[in-house]
Length: 447
Image (tube, rainbow, N blue to C red; front, side, top):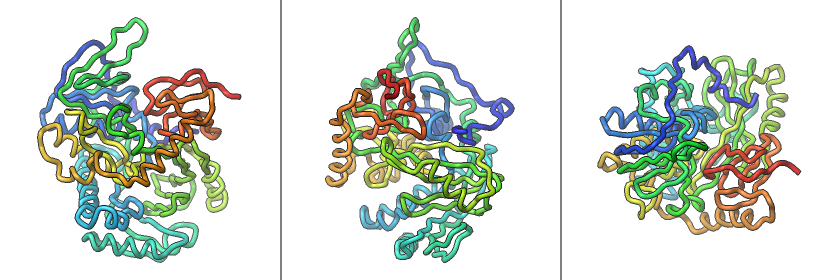
């Protein structure tokens, strides 16, 4: 029941590509670390450009966050545009909108080549409490030249105070898309990068195997959370957030994609005969509503529906709501990163892939300054995020995260040990589930 519906289709019939494990020493012009949507898109663009590259994935492609998304393709990222106008000004707010609309257009092109259940849908952000928030966002988006409007009612089972509509957005099946574009690419699975040095990646080895080594002129780190701590300060500039999804059979058709502007609210979209109900979110390592909150809602509003799927996602959150895409740091020549996509990993992956491929081929990305990982953060944001980590770093506990030593917290819904500092997660026995940790924790167990 805890497996995403995206992972449950007939891979054998569709010819799921399988890729070898990399061993020994190798040389390439560009190394991509991470086989999620962003990394595979990078590989696809480099393949089209005739660039020498390799992609390595610790597990199998799409085994991380790509297979746990709700798979909305939209440039409507909650109520972001009013915030961006205030934070970075009209020109860069318009760039953010344009970058994501271009990403959506690129998906339309690729969806013509790949059977991925691509569907055009309108996207909505609604409020149940504050009509003015929506009115202000409509005004902000229209000021940026995108036509949107205010809605009084929606096809949802409860009243709202208002909603903003983004027309012409889309949804798809992320694993069908990923496996479709991955065929024929130079990918290696079950190849875990444990350590990075300048222009070199070191591959972990099983007992009796030779430790692998890849030399590359340029390296792209597309591992969800950047795992190299010495540079870039990502342990201060990122945190991780979990959210939960139910796949309900026999629930209401909603004919669009919907998101509550409140962090505690719910999201909705259909896939076939299923309603995907999302929410129950919380910072990784903290308490939250989880699947229980979603089940209470489903029992109240969709009493006759049957629960077919239940899964969870984990998102890297930047401090200002804009992803970090570009040079890993100012001191790491030839090393690039893509992270901090928030809840919007689908369009952000496409934006990142196109920008990173420009960078490694010597072109100047159009939106480089907007997404620059070295841009200034507000001191208050850095202090708050750093304080959260410091509290858990100083918390007495025998169960510690091997990443930077924070005290781990037991997650009773998912039966995992989660790090509230940076979001690493571990099985009950200490086996690594999610990064930025690069190895297992000591044997953990339960009290």
